[in-house]
Length: 481
Image (cartoon, rainbow, N blue to C red; front, side):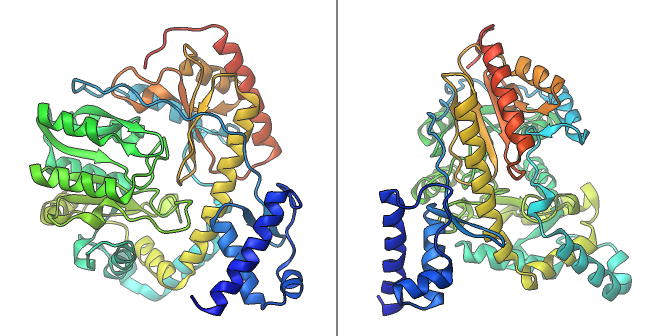
């Protein structure tokens, strides 16, 4: 270890000690970089390195134009319980309820806890739009022409480069761009499964994926997703021995809505378990770059030696939801996915691909991601703390490893659908648990988005939700696990 490393670790340990002894309390501003460099007799760069280390450890947070502060630690509630293992595959039927829930997302007067979208304040909108304008002026006819599959070469190179940094063995030729991650996931499902086939899914699961399966008439076999560790591999292995499963659909890096993250050993076991049976793994990595830990997690794709992992993601959560630029690394299924992509939508819009490619390469994308992760983690902690303070006794809440949603389990018997209806009457949206399952499960659960910066409006909304939840909890209905 060099002297510089020893210096920054000593400085970090000094500040950590002040926090542990209570000399610096949650919410307090820590000494400025220049002040601490003088106090400790070290360079400014050493203090910056120490503060970056403390940020990664979750002890402090940076606030733009303000400095560094001791991170507030939220009250700890127990994590939600995993559902029981399903013994039968189910026909999916969630579309009508999802339509009612998402109708509220179009109303700008609704507090948007129900929609998992990042606030425009967290996105580099002006810089990205400036890049788009410059690219449009320079691209001429190329900007208005079709960009047929596999898609924009410049963007595919950047996607492949970032995947290699996460441990994947891929090149630009292994990438197909799509209209968002949802098209990528839909293409993968259509390639590997037919109507009536069974696909194993983690449960609870994002309702958009259940809608996809409903539209394709694919049956869902729900495998419990364990808080903290992800899909239950023992339960999955038992299911594979009993059922004819055409594919597995899961989110190994940051699951949704639980926010669980599988260890590298678990990801490797999952990939090898399926490879032995020649079963494809559809990996949804939509929140993969919004992790909270100090190191970049590897996707399951990094352990794929048989070409059976089909990794899908997009820039929807990190850069621009409206640009609708996604991608898939389909492994051995690349040709089928590329052909189906052309039949499905002909091409991915050209200019947004070019703009994102340029931004990822030259626009400070990694710097933007670091700042966005810090802000999202702080927002998740603030909403969690407010839930702990205002929701009824017996509430459980997830501890996500990334992203910006919380899975809240209300006391047994509390109707999430009734809470959803009452909340809308107060101009607050939440996503009720039943839409996250093909079976009638999670009747006493809700998903809450933390994509918007904490404000008095959000604080009031959580207090109101807590009051409504207590009222609903006092009038218990049937609990569906």
